[in-house]
Image (cartoon, rainbow, N blue to C red; front, side):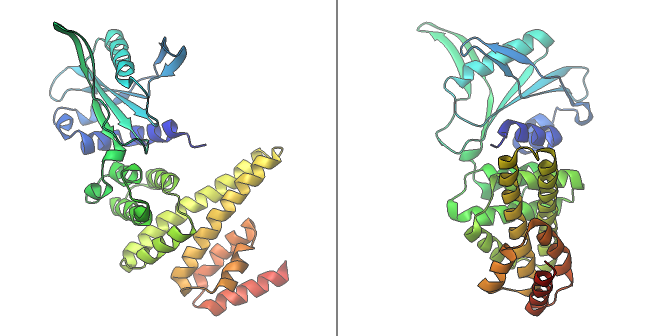
Length: 326
């Protein structure tokens, strides 16, 4: 199961300024860049559902050229919820009362369906009077088109395009464009892996889509191809290593371990096939079948060896030798 809230919270916390800059450029004009701090989590009792809820993200920031502060409350919602505006108002009222600071409320909706426009306010009114009109900002990803963010030199754009409005046939193209944009940003490795991991989580391609991805990748210039493949390789290697560590820690849970092992092996196979396609060109089905039969350890060994390959005969020789050695 994907922990959507954790992924989005990690992304927004790491790239909070870039998030505000992309979607709320007016706020940037009065927000002091170096003043942003994140407050401890806030727990609320939801009397409607009887549950305890945690506010996703609260940032305290200073108004530029002033001694005044305000809060930015950002709530992520991965599934639709009836009367969500009332919940946002309860959060607003609690935060405003506790901190005695103005609160700028934002909701980020990341679900795929429905695509109807979400409300941006909560109102309490009577026939003769409006008692309360509470407004909040909404970013609804399934109503944003990914092509409109292609030219944004912003890591949040590179990540969130993966959750925007995408036609099924465009999935390989969008993943390539996300990674291409990410490659141009020259982020440090940890931030690069956070974004690439986010993209891979929400744009996990099937075998046919992977083939289209590879074909489109080959149309890029050699430098861009290399940069994109470095990102993909780094993420896949991290996933393989994570799978190995999980396997060690959960050795007693054989069913779970086998499931994770199979998933990591499929990722490794996909990575190796892409690397070989770039290195020696298209392979016949026999070679592909031999590669798919390799163990995870063998795949990792092949991943190192293929850097010295020049054509398919090198691969065939390696497979024959490897087969004899096992």
